Amino acid sequence: MQFRKSWIMALALTSVVALSACGNGGNNAATNNGGTNAAATNTPTKSSGAELSGSILASGSTALQPLVEMAAEGFMDANAGVDIQVQGGGSGTGLTQVAEKQVDIGNSDVFAEEKLKDADAEKAKSLVDHQVAVVAIAAVSNPKAGVDSLTKQQLVDIFTGKIKNWSEVGGADQAIQIINRPASSGTRATFESFALGTKTEDQEGSIQEDSSGTVKKMIGETPGAIGYLALSYLDETVKTLNYEGVEPSVDNVISGKYPVWAYEHMYTNGEPAEHVKAFLDYIMTDEVQNGDVVELGYIPASKMQVSRDVEGKVSTK
Image (cartoon, rainbow, N blue to C red; front, side):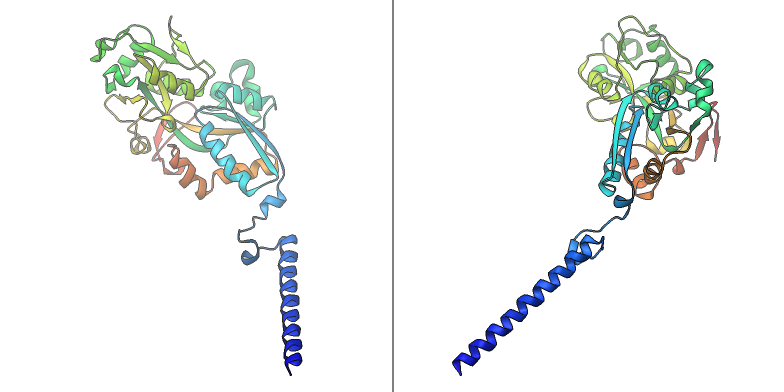
């Protein structure tokens, strides 16, 4: 009897092991065939990851760069076959490179028609505009400058060299140090168009930097410094200045009270390839527009109560 009981128990154990092996084999087969069995994989499968492949090179606006980089990370997480590289260089660089087909996407703070003029006007005609957000630009100073707000005329006088000391505008007795962007910068173009109302020449002694990130660092570390940055770059290391008494806040931009803003464009040369279009479509999803866009300090274009055309004319929606 004892022998019979031992034999029955051994047979049962063998059956359990066999069934377990079959069960595991079934799960592995489902996974290898692209199945989405959550119990087997413990993570959701995104079919687009298997369908899309290719590389994307984007260059241009450093004001837009943080958003494109963050969106690229999310897109590549879901699409393992796509590699995205994002470079700065300024809006003019991005537009020129996409027009010459050196990159897939040219990021810009300004309309291509506005930036590519004269000899390059024909190049702009081949570019397709994808407006992905709105960016606001604020004048910023070193925190010890001692000023909270500047008027349009005061800003003009500072950036044209007429005002040279912060004491002339109610601040500290400290020489003003201008930190500017190059002529190719869309951030500079936006600031000059809608804050100053005029183009300016680089003043003797002013410092020019290619990157918004470097501008922020220098303003925070340089006594008497002034410059301008997209809201997406603002933090406690710099002092954000009101414009004509109006705070450069998201709500004031949306309502049209704060005028220093522009659309963020991602241009392609003609209609984009499938994987490039998928990336651009991803940026326009609610996930990105109400997530990354807002988190980084940009504004979804759909929330704007006013619009602006290529000539700079603002109208109520």
